[in-house]
Image 1 (cartoon, rainbow over the protein chains, first blue to last red):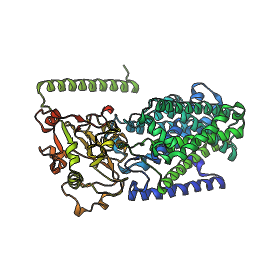
Image 2: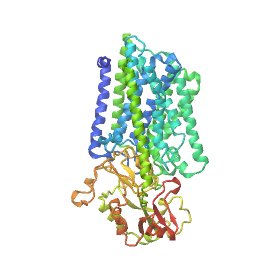
Image 3: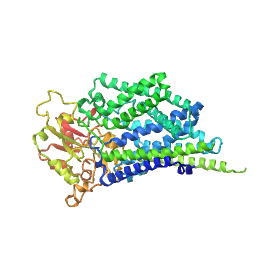
Image 4: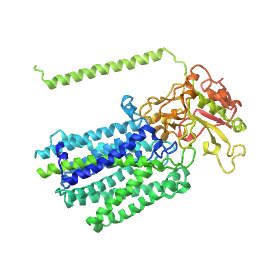
Length: 383
Length: 257
């Protein structure tokens, strides 16, 4: 089926070339980083993780969110998702690839990365994250390829796929839970050290992932003959509405404990992240924008008439995606280092190489995604 | 009886499992028997006590820092955001945020004390390391293998004391071969490093470089399991603080007030 990614219109090839170029620029900056070290980034001894790990965390969520279409379709036989389930699975594949690339970009000694498997360390959540992410990638590749291959031959999918699909459902939850455990067990990092970090991650993932999927479906409809139709969009919108509301609710819970308890350490990082309290003004514009996007999205999502309006719902999807990308993909990780162990404020601003490498990984992810979607659309056009 | 492929595989699997299981069980029993026969000598528990008053009295003294950083080829980087430090000065308020208040004694207020890796009994850095590049020795020293480290910096996020430094750039650029101590390895860029309690000296019964360099006797090193050691004597006579004890890390560095 791979050959279907290699034949396409002029528009398709221009798009792929553009993405390849952006990925190449990112890679050139990555070579610079390999040569000079992570000194080319904005990270330092106090803020020792930044944009790469933030983006990694965000895209683990997007990858996990495939479960929001896989579960209703396969577990509850919710046929509405039939046409788009494969798109969700392929979105998961490209997201996991992006995650692995972000991890690789963040390593000080990337060529030693196999040490994670040579010296397995079961006490480390990062070890488990590598294991579950690789497993999730393999599962989705197998499932996606087998179901699409069967669709091409107009046959039911092979029997061995069903158990894999059932395994992939809790597995999706596991990848984001383990990612949350990377943060949620660290002493004295109070923005992260919360029992609800994992559920917060899952709620925001189940809002941002389907929002992206909704936008991708619209793009597929716009540029190809493939018509997923109104119903899957309506069902996705409802999932986004519930998940995003839950996400906002969980955030309010964090604020309550931090501020009502009056314990400075609890309040400190949340306060500096959102209000620039104690001098953390650097994150304020990012978080203000996230909150504004979130408020706008809530208005649309909670009013059925607006949510059912296609244009308004598209706007809501953009707002949800932006709000969570800013909060989780940019703010959450570096802000967790505030205050530093010595009580100092850790400022962090990503540098040009860091931004270029991040953009390059986005482009590479989109490239993989476009190829996979192109294959899907071509198979469906033949059928 | 005809033996088909499936049965063969099934039997082979069961036999293998039984063999493996009994071998493992035998190992466990034998290990217990051996352990029961030989009483093990108690390992030492390395620890340090910092006499805050003496350290403060020495003013701008940096003898311990110089000796440590020279001996361990720690490059001196001016940019505080990217600096590498094994032992350094921190104000009392920053080292002990829970102890400081508006009316902190004048002889402590704003004064600097030495801070270093606490060689915790329950080190979060060791727990999170995905490659076992950092581990705790039997005598409590938290070790760092700078040649296995992949530079993920998870240990830096986990350490609540800021005791770990990352080589953001190639340290050789700041510390040329000629200036380096040939007796200690240099490292590449992209790995984490920290105080080692001079494990190589501890093994031969010698004191760490910082302790030897300290002229005022503010740094005391010894074995917590030996009631006659200098460190135990110091702790017996004075009130001692540890940094952020509520986190449960169990620091092995004590501060005598």
